[in-house]
Structure formats: C-alpha cells, structure tokens
Length: 141
Ligand code: FES
Image 1 (cartoon, rainbow, N blue to C red):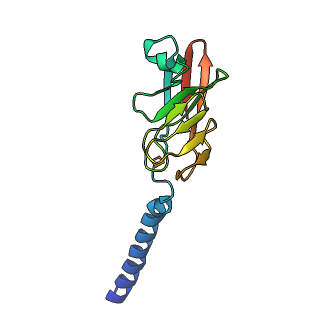
Image 2 (cartoon, protein in one colour):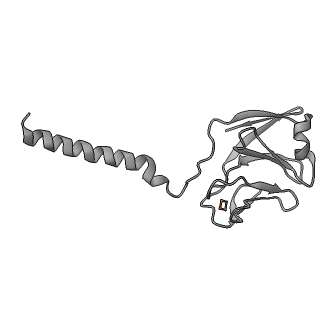
C-alpha cells in the first residue's frame, strides 16, 4: 500500500467513524432523558412503604432508584410510568384528583396515559406494564 492509498483509506475510515458516532448520539437531541429499560420490580400493597399509594391525597410511590412512578388512579387501577421528566429529568409527581402527572421544574403536565398535555416535555412518559397478583404488583418494561 502506498502513501496515497493509505491516506485514502484512512480518510474514509475517519469519516465513517465520525458518521457512526453521530448516529449514536446526535439524533437523540430531542430525548435527553431516556426512560429506564429492563425495569422489573414488585410492590407489596400491604407493606407500610405502600401507604402513599393508598392515600387518596398522594396516590403514588417511586421505585428504589426513582426511575419509575407507580400511581393509583381514581378508579382504582395501578399504572406505572418513567419518573424522570423527558425534558430535563426532574422527578414527576402524580395528582390523583386531576389524574395527571406533573413536573415541578417547568410545569410539564402529562395525562393519566402519560401523554403530554402542556409544557416543554418533548414526548410522553414511557409506560411500564403493571401486573397485579393478589396484593403484589409487578412492574416490568
Ligand atoms: S424538567 Fe420537567 S418540564 Fe422541564
């Protein structure tokens, strides 16, 4: 391989490397706070730590990592969504009376289905699957 061939190959290699690096991160500018993946935990509804979930004035709790918020809707269903706001990652809360998730930082509001109702959040909250078996909730997704 002569010098000209080497420079040609290196040039293409560097361009390819830059392109693949950009594909991996440049396209995520609209989603700076990706939701947690491989979520799998349980909630014992009879445990003292679940008291807020049953409290009509609160109606929610977080997992240990605060990556998921589990809420009890007014009709008694349990739902789970990503807790960090998709805008800048501040932990959202749940308003059971209004059936809405709210971010205290810039006031993004999400419906009980996680959809953006108002505010700067670039997308809906990711929803996780809640499976109830007796007094145990399993949250996965
Ligand atoms: S961090 Fe939630 S609206 Fe900005």
